[in-house]
Length: 293
Image (cartoon, rainbow, N blue to C red; front, side, top):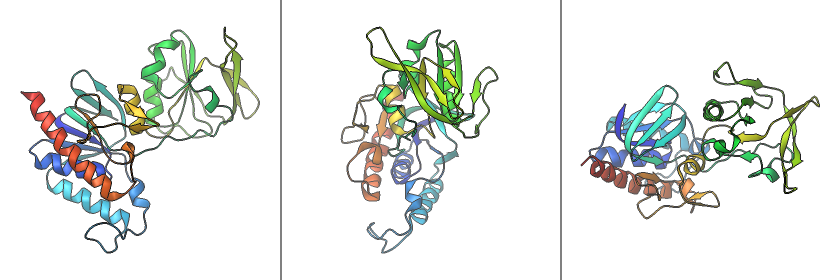
Protein backbone atom coordinates (compact mmCIF):
# COMPACT_ATOMS: atom_id res chain seq x y z
CA UNK A 1 0.00 0.00 0.00
CA UNK A 2 1.23 3.49 -0.81
CA UNK A 3 0.69 6.62 1.28
CA UNK A 4 2.20 10.05 1.46
CA UNK A 5 2.67 9.99 5.23
CA UNK A 6 2.68 7.08 7.67
CA UNK A 7 2.43 7.77 11.39
CA UNK A 8 3.37 5.18 13.99
CA UNK A 9 1.40 5.78 17.16
CA UNK A 10 -2.20 6.85 17.82
CA UNK A 11 -1.80 9.05 20.89
CA UNK A 12 -2.36 12.83 20.84
CA UNK A 13 0.89 13.50 18.91
CA UNK A 14 0.22 10.86 16.26
CA UNK A 15 -3.45 11.69 15.73
CA UNK A 16 -2.79 15.43 15.67
CA UNK A 17 -0.10 14.81 13.03
CA UNK A 18 -2.53 12.70 11.01
CA UNK A 19 -5.24 15.37 11.09
CA UNK A 20 -2.88 18.07 9.84
CA UNK A 21 -1.28 15.84 7.20
CA UNK A 22 -4.57 14.68 5.69
CA UNK A 23 -5.96 18.23 5.72
CA UNK A 24 -2.86 19.26 3.77
CA UNK A 25 -4.06 16.96 0.99
CA UNK A 26 -1.78 13.99 1.60
CA UNK A 27 -2.96 10.39 1.84
CA UNK A 28 -2.26 9.48 5.46
CA UNK A 29 -2.06 6.24 7.44
CA UNK A 30 -1.74 5.65 11.17
CA UNK A 31 -0.45 2.39 12.61
CA UNK A 32 -1.89 1.83 16.06
CA UNK A 33 -1.01 -0.96 18.46
CA UNK A 34 -3.87 -0.04 20.79
CA UNK A 35 -4.29 1.99 23.95
CA UNK A 36 -1.43 4.22 25.04
CA UNK A 37 -0.50 6.15 28.15
CA UNK A 38 -3.27 8.72 27.65
CA UNK A 39 -5.93 6.04 28.11
CA UNK A 40 -4.76 5.50 31.68
CA UNK A 41 -5.49 9.11 32.69
CA UNK A 42 -8.72 9.03 34.68
CA UNK A 43 -9.32 12.79 34.61
CA UNK A 44 -7.69 15.60 32.59
CA UNK A 45 -8.47 19.13 33.76
CA UNK A 46 -5.72 21.19 32.13
CA UNK A 47 -6.37 20.75 28.39
CA UNK A 48 -7.73 23.69 26.44
CA UNK A 49 -11.52 23.67 25.98
CA UNK A 50 -12.29 20.84 28.42
CA UNK A 51 -12.99 21.49 32.06
CA UNK A 52 -12.86 17.77 32.75
CA UNK A 53 -12.47 14.76 30.46
CA UNK A 54 -10.96 11.29 30.73
CA UNK A 55 -7.85 10.46 28.74
CA UNK A 56 -9.65 7.64 26.97
CA UNK A 57 -12.53 9.85 25.82
CA UNK A 58 -10.15 12.57 24.63
CA UNK A 59 -8.17 10.07 22.61
CA UNK A 60 -11.29 8.44 21.15
CA UNK A 61 -12.57 11.85 20.03
CA UNK A 62 -9.28 12.54 18.27
CA UNK A 63 -9.24 9.16 16.52
CA UNK A 64 -12.84 9.56 15.35
CA UNK A 65 -12.05 13.03 14.05
CA UNK A 66 -9.08 11.69 12.08
CA UNK A 67 -11.19 8.91 10.58
CA UNK A 68 -13.91 11.38 9.52
CA UNK A 69 -11.26 13.42 7.70
CA UNK A 70 -10.10 10.36 5.75
CA UNK A 71 -7.14 9.03 7.75
CA UNK A 72 -6.72 5.24 7.45
CA UNK A 73 -5.98 3.69 10.85
CA UNK A 74 -4.52 0.19 10.95
CA UNK A 75 -4.67 -1.78 14.20
CA UNK A 76 -1.31 -3.53 14.10
CA UNK A 77 2.12 -3.50 15.71
CA UNK A 78 4.87 -1.85 13.67
CA UNK A 79 7.98 -4.02 13.73
CA UNK A 80 10.30 -2.46 11.15
CA UNK A 81 11.01 0.65 9.08
CA UNK A 82 13.14 0.41 5.95
CA UNK A 83 14.73 3.48 4.40
CA UNK A 84 16.45 3.87 1.04
CA UNK A 85 15.43 7.41 0.16
CA UNK A 86 11.78 6.54 0.75
CA UNK A 87 10.24 4.48 3.53
CA UNK A 88 8.54 1.13 3.97
CA UNK A 89 6.83 0.32 7.27
CA UNK A 90 5.96 -3.26 8.19
CA UNK A 91 3.24 -4.07 10.71
CA UNK A 92 2.08 -7.67 10.78
CA UNK A 93 0.89 -8.52 7.26
CA UNK A 94 0.73 -4.83 6.34
CA UNK A 95 3.47 -3.10 4.37
CA UNK A 96 3.12 0.63 3.78
CA UNK A 97 5.37 2.49 1.35
CA UNK A 98 5.47 6.23 1.95
CA UNK A 99 7.37 9.44 1.41
CA UNK A 100 7.55 10.43 5.08
CA UNK A 101 7.22 8.75 8.48
CA UNK A 102 6.35 10.28 11.85
CA UNK A 103 7.38 8.48 15.05
CA UNK A 104 4.82 9.21 17.76
CA UNK A 105 5.23 6.23 20.07
CA UNK A 106 6.17 7.98 23.28
CA UNK A 107 9.14 6.95 25.41
CA UNK A 108 9.46 3.43 26.61
CA UNK A 109 12.05 0.75 26.86
CA UNK A 110 11.08 -2.17 29.00
CA UNK A 111 13.58 -3.30 31.59
CA UNK A 112 14.24 -7.01 31.69
CA UNK A 113 14.75 -7.27 35.43
CA UNK A 114 17.35 -9.98 34.82
CA UNK A 115 20.31 -9.88 37.17
CA UNK A 116 23.53 -8.62 35.59
CA UNK A 117 22.14 -7.78 32.16
CA UNK A 118 22.50 -3.98 32.26
CA UNK A 119 26.25 -4.13 32.87
CA UNK A 120 26.73 -6.12 29.64
CA UNK A 121 25.10 -3.68 27.22
CA UNK A 122 27.60 -3.28 24.40
CA UNK A 123 29.45 -6.39 25.58
CA UNK A 124 27.20 -9.11 24.21
CA UNK A 125 23.88 -7.48 25.05
CA UNK A 126 22.27 -5.31 22.36
CA UNK A 127 19.00 -3.48 21.72
CA UNK A 128 19.39 -3.41 17.93
CA UNK A 129 19.62 -6.43 15.62
CA UNK A 130 19.97 -4.20 12.54
CA UNK A 131 22.89 -2.31 14.15
CA UNK A 132 24.81 -5.22 15.66
CA UNK A 133 23.63 -8.43 13.99
CA UNK A 134 26.53 -8.41 11.50
CA UNK A 135 29.03 -8.81 14.37
CA UNK A 136 27.51 -12.19 15.26
CA UNK A 137 28.12 -13.96 11.97
CA UNK A 138 28.26 -17.71 12.53
CA UNK A 139 27.60 -17.35 16.25
CA UNK A 140 24.81 -18.49 18.55
CA UNK A 141 22.53 -15.68 19.68
CA UNK A 142 19.36 -15.18 21.66
CA UNK A 143 16.47 -12.73 21.53
CA UNK A 144 14.70 -11.78 24.74
CA UNK A 145 10.98 -11.21 24.19
CA UNK A 146 7.72 -12.96 23.39
CA UNK A 147 5.92 -10.74 20.86
CA UNK A 148 5.99 -9.78 17.20
CA UNK A 149 8.94 -7.44 17.71
CA UNK A 150 11.06 -10.24 19.17
CA UNK A 151 10.25 -12.55 16.25
CA UNK A 152 11.06 -9.76 13.78
CA UNK A 153 14.47 -9.22 15.42
CA UNK A 154 15.11 -12.97 15.38
CA UNK A 155 14.31 -13.16 11.66
CA UNK A 156 16.84 -10.42 10.94
CA UNK A 157 19.51 -12.17 13.01
CA UNK A 158 18.93 -15.52 11.29
CA UNK A 159 20.66 -14.13 8.17
CA UNK A 160 23.94 -13.87 10.13
CA UNK A 161 23.87 -16.19 13.13
CA UNK A 162 24.56 -19.89 13.37
CA UNK A 163 21.48 -20.30 15.57
CA UNK A 164 18.79 -18.09 17.07
CA UNK A 165 16.95 -18.84 20.30
CA UNK A 166 13.97 -16.78 21.45
CA UNK A 167 13.95 -16.55 25.25
CA UNK A 168 10.42 -15.70 26.40
CA UNK A 169 11.43 -15.60 30.10
CA UNK A 170 8.43 -17.56 31.34
CA UNK A 171 5.93 -15.92 28.96
CA UNK A 172 3.93 -17.63 26.22
CA UNK A 173 5.04 -16.79 22.69
CA UNK A 174 2.40 -14.38 21.38
CA UNK A 175 2.94 -14.93 17.64
CA UNK A 176 4.04 -17.74 15.37
CA UNK A 177 7.78 -18.08 14.83
CA UNK A 178 9.66 -19.88 12.03
CA UNK A 179 10.12 -23.58 12.76
CA UNK A 180 13.93 -23.36 12.67
CA UNK A 181 14.02 -20.99 15.66
CA UNK A 182 14.57 -22.46 19.09
CA UNK A 183 12.02 -21.32 21.68
CA UNK A 184 13.07 -21.35 25.34
CA UNK A 185 10.17 -20.48 27.64
CA UNK A 186 11.73 -21.24 31.02
CA UNK A 187 12.30 -18.16 33.23
CA UNK A 188 15.81 -16.65 33.23
CA UNK A 189 17.62 -16.34 36.54
CA UNK A 190 20.69 -14.38 35.42
CA UNK A 191 23.21 -13.83 32.65
CA UNK A 192 26.60 -15.54 32.65
CA UNK A 193 29.87 -13.80 31.83
CA UNK A 194 33.22 -14.78 30.38
CA UNK A 195 36.40 -12.84 29.64
CA UNK A 196 37.32 -11.76 26.14
CA UNK A 197 40.87 -11.31 24.79
CA UNK A 198 41.27 -8.02 26.68
CA UNK A 199 39.95 -9.62 29.89
CA UNK A 200 36.74 -7.58 29.65
CA UNK A 201 33.62 -9.30 30.98
CA UNK A 202 31.30 -10.18 28.09
CA UNK A 203 28.16 -12.27 27.77
CA UNK A 204 28.78 -15.97 28.04
CA UNK A 205 25.29 -17.35 28.32
CA UNK A 206 22.04 -17.57 30.24
CA UNK A 207 21.25 -19.30 33.51
CA UNK A 208 17.69 -20.60 33.63
CA UNK A 209 15.57 -20.79 36.76
CA UNK A 210 16.13 -24.52 37.13
CA UNK A 211 19.92 -24.03 37.07
CA UNK A 212 20.57 -25.12 33.48
CA UNK A 213 23.06 -23.00 31.51
CA UNK A 214 22.57 -22.05 27.87
CA UNK A 215 25.70 -20.79 26.08
CA UNK A 216 25.14 -17.88 23.67
CA UNK A 217 27.42 -15.20 22.25
CA UNK A 218 24.88 -12.40 22.04
CA UNK A 219 21.51 -11.46 23.51
CA UNK A 220 19.21 -8.96 21.79
CA UNK A 221 16.56 -7.30 23.95
CA UNK A 222 13.17 -7.03 22.21
CA UNK A 223 10.65 -6.84 25.03
CA UNK A 224 7.13 -5.66 24.28
CA UNK A 225 6.72 -3.45 21.23
CA UNK A 226 9.36 -1.48 19.37
CA UNK A 227 9.58 2.05 20.78
CA UNK A 228 10.35 5.27 18.94
CA UNK A 229 13.87 5.01 20.36
CA UNK A 230 14.28 1.50 18.95
CA UNK A 231 13.33 2.64 15.44
CA UNK A 232 15.56 5.71 15.79
CA UNK A 233 18.52 3.54 16.74
CA UNK A 234 18.09 1.30 13.70
CA UNK A 235 17.76 4.24 11.29
CA UNK A 236 20.75 6.19 12.56
CA UNK A 237 18.73 9.01 14.11
CA UNK A 238 20.59 11.31 16.49
CA UNK A 239 19.41 10.86 20.08
CA UNK A 240 20.54 12.14 23.46
CA UNK A 241 19.85 10.09 26.59
CA UNK A 242 17.12 8.27 24.69
CA UNK A 243 15.49 11.49 23.46
CA UNK A 244 15.09 11.91 19.69
CA UNK A 245 16.61 15.16 18.46
CA UNK A 246 14.52 17.11 15.94
CA UNK A 247 14.32 20.57 14.41
CA UNK A 248 11.43 22.96 15.07
CA UNK A 249 9.21 21.09 12.58
CA UNK A 250 9.92 17.71 14.15
CA UNK A 251 12.29 16.43 11.44
CA UNK A 252 15.20 14.26 12.51
CA UNK A 253 18.61 14.09 10.82
CA UNK A 254 17.14 11.43 8.49
CA UNK A 255 15.32 13.25 5.63
CA UNK A 256 11.60 12.55 5.75
CA UNK A 257 11.65 11.00 9.21
CA UNK A 258 9.89 13.06 11.86
CA UNK A 259 9.15 12.59 15.56
CA UNK A 260 6.59 14.15 17.90
CA UNK A 261 5.39 13.79 21.46
CA UNK A 262 7.06 12.27 24.50
CA UNK A 263 9.87 10.64 22.48
CA UNK A 264 11.28 14.14 21.83
CA UNK A 265 11.48 15.13 25.50
CA UNK A 266 10.27 18.31 27.17
CA UNK A 267 7.17 18.38 29.35
CA UNK A 268 5.06 15.26 29.04
CA UNK A 269 1.70 16.93 28.48
CA UNK A 270 -1.13 16.44 25.97
CA UNK A 271 -0.90 20.08 24.90
CA UNK A 272 2.76 19.75 23.90
CA UNK A 273 2.15 16.47 22.11
CA UNK A 274 -0.71 17.94 20.08
CA UNK A 275 1.36 20.99 19.11
CA UNK A 276 4.36 18.92 18.08
CA UNK A 277 2.11 16.54 16.15
CA UNK A 278 0.57 19.44 14.23
CA UNK A 279 3.99 20.81 13.26
CA UNK A 280 5.30 17.40 12.25
CA UNK A 281 2.15 16.56 10.29
CA UNK A 282 2.36 19.74 8.23
CA UNK A 283 6.09 19.37 7.63
CA UNK A 284 5.82 15.68 6.72
CA UNK A 285 3.02 16.43 4.25
CA UNK A 286 5.13 19.14 2.64
CA UNK A 287 8.14 16.82 2.46
CA UNK A 288 6.08 14.03 0.91
CA UNK A 289 4.68 16.32 -1.78
CA UNK A 290 8.14 17.68 -2.57
CA UNK A 291 9.67 14.18 -2.80
CA UNK A 292 7.19 13.24 -5.54
CA UNK A 293 8.32 16.06 -7.82
